[in-house]
Amino acid sequence: MSVIALYISSVTGNTRQVADAIRKDLFPAYEVIVCDSRSPAAYPKADLCLLCFWCRRATLDPNSQKVLHLYRRQPFLAIGTMGGHPNSAYGERVRENVRQAVDANNRCQGIFLCRGKIPEARTEYRRALPKDHRLYLDDAGYARHLSSRSHPDAADLTHAVAFVRNALRRLDL
Figure 1 (cartoon, rainbow, N blue to C red):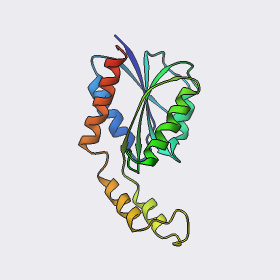
Figure 2: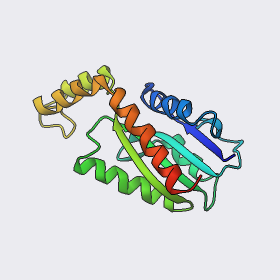
Figure 3: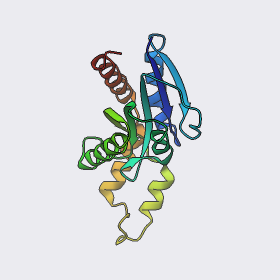
């Protein structure tokens, strides 16, 4: 039976939802060891690591970055949530940054991104900034923030599970 280490870093609960859907799908066909990315001191030997992260400044959150330093030449799948659209230019930038971070010492086997809800406080903070501030949220940005509130939705979870299943088949695990 293949061993999968499932690292979860979640602040708002978005990433936890995605990781839970994946974990439920993997059990009992795989031995899944769930690890908290906030305290990755003890790390398991695994055939594959799933790194469930939230996007911060176009890359992995800080706790997820620390997990990568625990391993060398380990195969990883990266599964992330982000406030923006995964199929946008920003989403491509996130993918490239994550791939580089994983490939620095390990082996990136794929990256999945889906939307996650943006906290209301962050939306209101950015909306209240002066209009000439680089982080000011204009009407289009405000609409994008509001539309994120329904994510991750059932389709996002289904796509995340399918991504992992396909990767496991491709990796023959």
